[in-house]
Image (cartoon, rainbow, N blue to C red; front, side, top):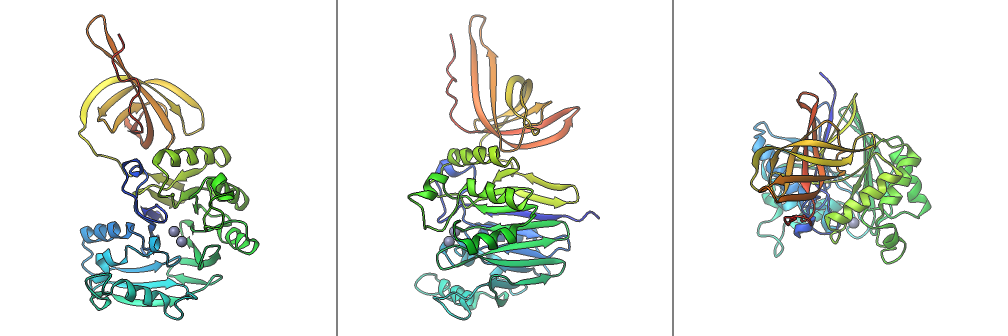
Length: 396
Ligand SMILES: [Zn+2]
Ligand SMILES: [Zn+2]
């Protein structure tokens, strides 16, 4: 059987969860990633609010024999621990968790255990930590440490962040993933740590909270980084893919779009972390997929539209395509071109009204899905529209 490693993003937002409608496309939950190694070993990277959804997913999958997982916590800021009380598998005695984190200068020995006890305590939470019935084991680690979990090598490195933060590298049998969030560049020792940690990584997940301008002015010293810094590191260490992560709570989707497209000019294999995004690593390389967005009523149809955008090889295209379904949120198109995931497309639909009128609908969208060959020599392309159509009024 083919060896694959699967990584799923359950939370990608930095600092605090967001609910504003203009942050829905990338997502509002704070950091939490799930990695499953080829031998089945499970890892959770950070316990932000995204952790709740992962727990619900495991509940649905009914792991009757119990689950064993390694939980790697980068640091103790709220956005990285806030999901802990809401993760159902922690309250099931059949499950077993191995926690890894560092000794905080403020908390002393058993830092993570203390964090759990403080979080699940009056008056902050209605029940206390004794109800957390899963078996728990705590490992205190530090930057520079390496250990093995079945067939996966884990490495930790200190990053530059207020009160400390660890970056993690997981070398699995199907490829390597580096999770380096909450890091500010510019301190030689930490810059060197990060480059060593990320060297040759198949997937580098990196803090891209601010614009380069913010990072050098108003947000200097806040402990975060920018897309530009991410692209520099990715190039220097010869990473194969860069994932912009820890989006600012005040960055609407269109701001993240701008960061992504600017980053792609510097380092083409860049993606913006999106809630529900999954990355599969195998001998065929790295495959990125986004969760389908299926909000709103869909209407099955078949009509033509002119679609323009950028294909996977970086060329621009324009072609007549078949629209297969449409809602006000998005559309499913059949195209000969293979537009790039997370790239912008324009869909222009011309509908003949009565003889003397025609209406034109021009919609800007972003590609969230592309599957080859559903129809012969055509690609099935999912698009989410990203702003209100500006030319939706009938043109007389
Ligand atoms: Zn954070
Ligand atoms: Zn932090």
